Structure formats: structure tokens, C-alpha cells
Image: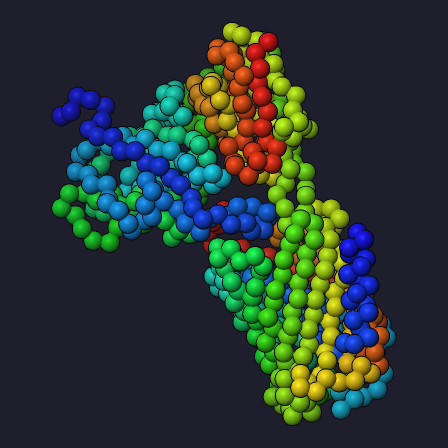
Length: 261
Length: 292
């Protein structure tokens, strides 16, 4: 536990030198992919308790916005998958709106290669309406490295983003890392800290004031191999970040065809 | 016509290679394998088993995998099981699939009466792709071998037993409760028999010449191929369903179930009892039987 607290303190200090993925899918990716002959259906529910109260670059405020995202991921083989997102938003004055869709193919280093860490690479691209995201067409490449040691789990996602259409189109590659550390308190309950950031252009890091920084103490409930459950409450300490967000992910595995186990 | 029971005998040894750890459904690490073999060769390598129409081939099959159960099928043919773990069975039932836990042996007669070429191997495609299979080739037949079809994986030791349950009462009853302790999603479970994890164990005491009813009470979420050295035992019930006439020295006790077996203590000396899944044995799933 001392190690966990030390690492948490270190990450919090790093905030002083360190912008976040949109509040539609708040998740640090592990290296595992969805197995073949199976589909993962997830519902991401994110409520911004204290966020942006004004329109910025034509985008609606996020304060008290409820974002619901459906993510459907199909396993292709033991080293690849394709995910599809449907983003929605609900907030006072705007009602319930479709925000956009993304598609996310991903490949991983197969476990049978016996690498000492899990490694995968995802690419996410798609559209979001300008009312909700000034950058409408975007592309992201996300390397993923993770490791489980006993009760400890570590994951880093040093993602790079590129805007194809929107105010940031001239920014070039943006750097938007995420990381997670967690500890298995019991077989069913895992607690940890998730970190999300957006530093702006990789060639010209934003001032801290303009960076997005979010820290989410989070709980994973491992109640069944068929279910994925994650809860968290996040704080954004910089001016460019929504200050309080509550998130939940509920996922269900569906297996098709012949079981191999 | 050959008056013997069979015309020829073939020995089949299954093995898995290049192990690696991966996450299991129940949350702890498990062992998987990149490759598999039959008689030391991956499917597609080595010589086929060449047979003639009308032959009766006796297969002596051993699952020598350290941890993996295997399901075997030979398309177009069925297995008449004569013995399990070397002990003749009470009923020589004919089955389409053989389920073999680690260290289990099956002696099965196959009538070669469907000329063609076939893959005798794992019923599950991913295991065949890893190498678990061997080609069976009839004389003067060539072409792509037929693969086992997907089928429901079912196995019941009781089909090889007598319909009548054993009527003999045990002199002693010995409960053996199998449980595990979670050590993290990135670790193997620690295994226990009666709450003790080897080498911390309380020996099970046997009385020479007497009948001991072993109650394998598997409270874990894994199947366990439990093995007793130097003896065999008679399976007398599986999840409350009684049987008799099936003698084994390895029996797969399914997750969350009970299997009962009668042991006649007829070979004095210290005797190991353990799960034959190597990673379970290495993590405490072992104890010693001693004669009083």
C-alpha cells in the first residue's frame, strides 16, 4: 500500500508539469483484445458535475452534461479487434443529442509471443458534431503497454492525436497520454488511480493553464468474466479541464459459436 | 479373420509446448500453450498412421500435457473404450469423443471401416491449429484429410461403469476439500487440500486392507485431474450419481462438484496424492497418504 500511495503522490506531483480525452469515453486501455467469436458491449456514462459553463469555439458547455457512449467491440482473432462508438449527450437546453461516431481497430502482440509486458496499438478515427467538439474529424493512435504483477496492475497509453477538421488542424500531433495503476484488494474488488491528460501539440506543449489534466480514483468490480464494471470520480485541477466528473463503465461479453475452453 | 481382439496397436502421446501465462476467466493467471504435438510431432509433420480397411486398431493414448485437458476425435469413426488408466472398464461403451485430463490414459479399439484420410486429433480447432493431431490414412487413399467437426464436448465416466452402484460400505470416509486462495490477477492461485497447502500438510492415514471412501469435494472454479500414486480407486459417485466398475488413478473432478471413489489400501508405503495440473501441484495442491 505504501508503494501505491507513493506512486499516487508522484502522479499528482506530475500534474504540475503535465489536457484529457473527450468526456465520452474515459478509460485507460489494457493490452488485451476481445477474443475471437465474442463481442463486448459497453456503456460509458459520464456526468460532468462541474465543467465548462460557456460556449468555447462554438462548442456547447459541458457543465452538468450527461454523456452516454455505447461501445461495441468485436474480436477478430487472438491479436485484433474492431471497436465502434456511438456518442450521445444530454444536457439542459440541448436535450438528448447524437454527438458522433468513431471506429477503432486495434492489434496486439499475441500472448503466445511471451513478451514481458502486454502491448497493443489502437487507431481511432471518426466524427463528432461541432456543437460538442470543435475538432470534428479526428484521428488518434494509441500505443498501449500494461503489466500485471501479483495484485498490482500498471498501464500506460501515450496517445497521439491529429485533427483533420477543426480549430486544431494546424496543431499537428497532439500528445494525450493516459495511465493507470491499481491493486487487487480482493478477487472481486480492484482499486486504483487513472490519469488522463492532453498536453497540446507535441512540438509545442501548452502552458499548464491550457493543458487538460484529470485524475480519477476508480474501482473495478470483477464480479464475473462476462461483466466489466468500473466506477470513478475525477478531478481536473487546471483551468482547461472540467473540474469534477463522475464516470461509470458497464460492459458485457457475449460469446458466439463454439467455445474453445 | 484375426482371432485376436485387434490387428495392430498404436501408441498416441499428446503434449503441449511453449507455455505462457494469460488471464483466466476466474481472475487468476492460467497456463496456455503456443504449440501441441502427437507423438512429438505437430499436425502436418511426421508420418501418418497408415491403416487398411477392415483393420481393428487398438489405440493406447496418454495425455502427457502438464496442464491441459484434451478432447480427441477421429471423424467417421468411434472409439470402443476397453480400459481407463490401464484398468479394464465394466462397460466397453462406444463414444465419439475422448476427454483426457492431464495424465489420463485411454485404451480404445477403433474399427477402420470408413476409407479415406482423416485428422485424428483435438476436437477443438484452435488446439488442432496448435498441432494436436495426426493424420490417419487408409491404404490407396490420398487427399486433404477430413477434420473433426465442431461438437458438444461431453464426457461421463459413468457410461463405462456398471449400472448398479457399489453395495460395499466403506470402512473409513476421507473428505478431501479442494479450495484456492486468490493471490492477485497477476499470480497463480494458492491451492489447498483440507485448508492445507503443501508442503504444509496433514497426512491422510490409511489402514491396510480396508476400504476408504475418498470424497473429492472441489469447491473451486477449476476442474482438477487428481492422481493417487501406487494405487487405483473405484469411482463410486459423480455429483451424487452412483456408479461402479470404473477403476482409475487419475480422475477429473469438475469445478464445484463432488466425486467419490473407493480406495482399498493394498500397497503399504508413503503415497502422494495431488492434482496432476502442474501449476496447481506447484502451488500447494498435494498431500501424502500414509499407512497406519
